[in-house]
Image (tube, rainbow, N blue to C red; front, side, top):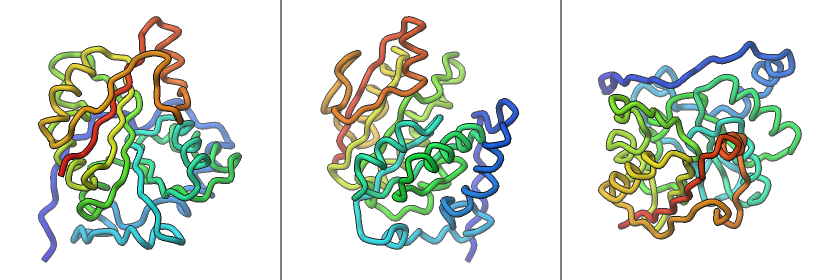
Length: 232
């Protein structure tokens, strides 16, 4: 029996500046081959769990990046860890186009893309299948009345906790002190423990600074890096 449609509000941007011809080419010719099938409800109305073992040629750890922005971190990690399979989620079309260009240039083959709301992906991932999740410079939603739209809220974190393996790692990078506050308050409640909290110059060993981080540094905002472990 088909489940009733879940109504969710989505507040992030989907379209930005006019795409260049090259970016339109990436979207028209590259996206479909990399797009994860069976995530959107039109393709999977019964929300049947994905066969994650079939996503890549051989069994491998599964990582997820939530909101990959321009894709530099996602491609960097895919190139550094070719033995891992990574799913990147991003609804912003301009960001997707930038990522596709970087994938062409780097030639990485261990990536899948969900060009939409990450909650739709979480709905169809099997329980306890993800080994690592990245949340890099998420939309800060700075106004107090908009804090409920942040990723580090129960509506997202409960879904995240379900799909992560016990012991899996959840990384958060942000330049917003109040986002750090809310992350430290909400993430442990969802079933995680904080294992590291560092600042500028002390990121993860495999970190690559993104364009969002560089903008924050130019504007005088210090980065914060938080690492959590999924309990279980």
